[in-house]
Length: 67
Figure 1: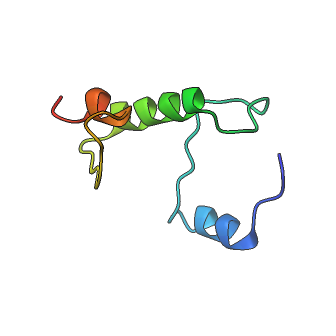
Figure 2: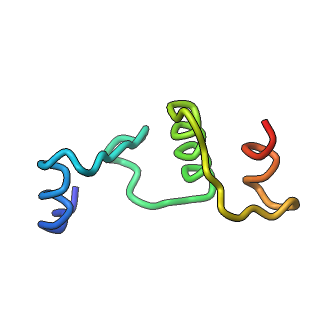
């Protein structure tokens, strides 16, 4: 894992930032597939979702809007 910025570490230590990932150290780049897996995880553990913009023909809309 690359070294995180000291500001990020400080926020985590102060319990003001939570970093959640379903991936191990072998995943080092974001792809559309890994982004959707991450989005699904966050949606599953969230009480509410706020999606400020979503195109009806896009990827997010059919999976998360008006569920």
